[in-house]
Image (spheres, each protein chain N blue to C red):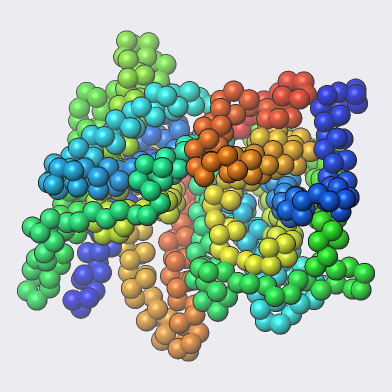
Amino acid sequence: MNGWFSVRNAAIVALLLALVLLPVYVEMGGSRFLLTLFTRILILAMAAVSLNLILGYGGMMSFGHAAYLGIGGYAVGMLAHEGIFSGFIQWPVALLASALFALVIGALSLRTRGVYFIMITLAFAQMAYYVVAGLARYGGDDGLTIYKRSQFVAPLDLSNKIQFYYICLALLFASIYLVWRIVNSRFGMAIQGARSNDTRMRAIGFPTYRYKLVCFIIAGTMCGLAGALLANHTDFVSPAMMYWTRSGDLIIMVVLGGMGSAFGPLVGAVALLVLEEVLSGITEYWQIILGPLLLLVVLFARGGIDGLLGKVRHRVSHG
Amino acid sequence: MTLFIEQCLNGLQFGLLLFLLAAGLTLVFGIMDLVNLAHGSLYMIGAYFAATFVAWTGNFIFGVVLALGATLLVGMVVEVVVMRRLYGRDHLDHVLGTFGLILFFDELVRLVWGPEGLTLPLPSWLNTSMQILPGVDYSAYKLSIIVVTLAVAIFLYVLVMRTRIGMLIRAGASNREMVGALGVNIKLLYTLVFGLGAALAGLAGLMQAPILTVQIGMGENILILAFVITVIGGIGSIRGALVAAIFVGFIDTLGRAFFPDLLRMVLSKEAAATAAPALSSMLIYLLMAVVLVVKPEGLFSASGK
């Protein structure tokens, strides 16, 4: 990180400024839709930030990260359905449920490596999807409408769109900061060491399994919070929010933005969701363009947008 | 009792069908070290081709054979255009690249065949039921699926273990450079293997088509089951895929059929009714979790990767 004046840093500062000033622009007569779109982008960016912690830094290729979005969302949705609206109960429950799920799934999945890990996390997330889709009391396949957003103390009002936008923005920044602090701590160094060479890390005395499991749980919990936000944003939860293609979207955001860079997932989330919005404006069959585009990124732009903007970063290799 | 036998046969039929998918997946992974998420798309394309060709030709067998050939061709084209560039890359690249392919294929199918599903009607000679045991009737079509998939399993075994091509495939799996250096056209071999995997997926898709509707995304749910099977059986092992597929087929089918009744014995009626659908869909994942705890590399791990 030497030399603060680079194209890459300038671009990131510009993006952050734009995000902070967006509600001002909307208030001055910009489209309200922009605010809704970008609130959504911020929330999914937060999920991508959490995925980046395990995928980019930890080398754990989880293909089931959307499960936590669903669990966090359903914690809010189910409690609201039972008449409990207080955010002081809903959000901790969402975090706790995601952490517990991550603990169980992580403990099982981290026994394996590589492709097995991809398939197993995918399968467990899909299991969660089917379980939720089978809960007839909470809408099953059709999902569950939330009639009242999470209630906090007086000045905080999640129904206020601008306030909610800034809450999401603040939580996103907080999660980026948290990941940055984790990655640069001794714990984070051990995680990155385990990514590069797990056997060697164990040989010098690090219980890498436990380190990775804790990292996995932190990421899951963070994504659960994003899920709670998403439920409040859409006032609706459905199994679709944890369908496996959503996990795929999150991976795309991380890779598109640049794996293992602090702001990469945010850049990737903005890029992917804005691109989706633009393409779907051009043609109804926009995925026929997005699919091959994705393939091209994989084949020719491995470092993602972050890599294109900055100097060539060393490739992250996996075992 | 009749119901139980029928459900057992359904489980066997579903398991063998899953085997076709898992075999292609595990073959491609074992030999090319490639994770192919788009395998489910080939399953879908096989079903769409079959529905189209059967309608065109008016002959079930003829249409099905055409569809198989066409899926094989699509698979080989995909290999030459895309997959070839992904060999030797990171597994994450495979996941993302083939995820892009899924988006592409889903949308392409929607563009060509429209968003509504198709149906593949059975010819009258298959749309009957046969008496398999005194007093037990079973669908002739499902029975023929069992026969065809068993034949394919035997064919695969003979192909891989008893022929020259199979020898090259196995050799390519253990050391591709060496096989290439010995003068074997390894690129062509890979294209053929990928095409074979595609044809297996297509076969599974077109055989399932008359039972369910042919629709976009039909390959995605079943792909996850195929993943579970490869994890349980051990990646790269065709034998493991067969055993695990039959296991999963049985547990899934019998679980859905009888688990709610079992639950009713333990829980109250309402509790059982709410919990049953969620729990019975969890069964195979629990099986996977148990296998992972006992043998993290799967039951019949081929290479220990």
